[in-house]
Image (cartoon, rainbow, N blue to C red; front, side, top):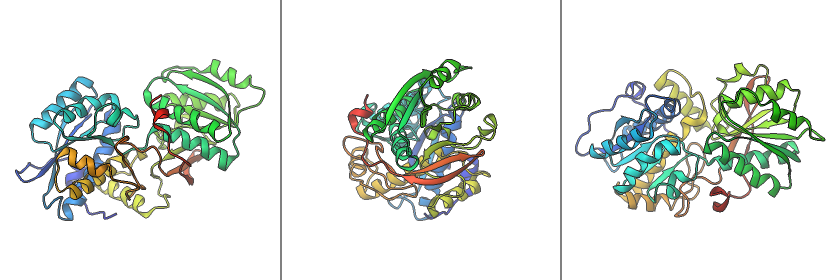
Length: 389
């Protein structure tokens, strides 16, 4: 990975004036509201890759510029932001991480035959199935994360029994559990129980009682949730004396929440790359350093990474197509099979504009310290019919 930055422009988030011969990327993203915490890091990563491409001579011999509009973490504002950026000449739209909040802007792009990329959406609908043929996500599906945890825990930790604890608040959580529910029994494991809760629940005492009532403590608990509910659930599970290995998805990557769970051990997540300086791939740490140079701090979680990947893949497809025209770029993206990126190979097809398999770094928290303990790629992709459940 070539890390060549115009650090001032990226750090300040300044969009340069757009010239007639520029290629223009529109960012319909949350610059305010709850979704800003997810959109800003991935947007910063996307702009790092733009700066690298520009420094190396640009795309199709032209410079890439960006324009932006604030969705305010609101679905109606998302649609308005998308339309505004198209009116201002965007050749491609980058939209919010979450499918529900990014889709209105992506649909505006689709109606004009323009490519859209979700910053880090991990719901299969963020693509062909929910938006249309010119929409993509460079992130790894939530179901792949759950399937990775299932197969890894059986192979590496000899897990034979699992308990599924699903936070039903958002679709992402359901996707994690869908992948685990598919892979764990497929690989020979036994799901011995399941329960649900809501992210805002102050207590999961009844769910813990049912876990403790099992004849034997499950080898693993597949906790499908996000912060703050995930931290609360983990704290209560450990306080109840349950020592099962706790698994989750990438949404709880980062150490920022560990103060709520003192001395936590036995908690594992799969991520696209490690923010902790121990990723075995030099390109990942080079990006972490570039991100720190641009912003003054390292990434707080691995959710920054898909922003970099999406610009990388789209730019390659544009070069191969020789144009930014949506359908021609889509055709080149759909030819990508194990396309190299700094964060591992990526593939698209005319049936799926997501990653239904990917090598993940496995992060385990031991004594409140996260670290890479291994890597894992599921033995077979998650089938489309499973993703659509």
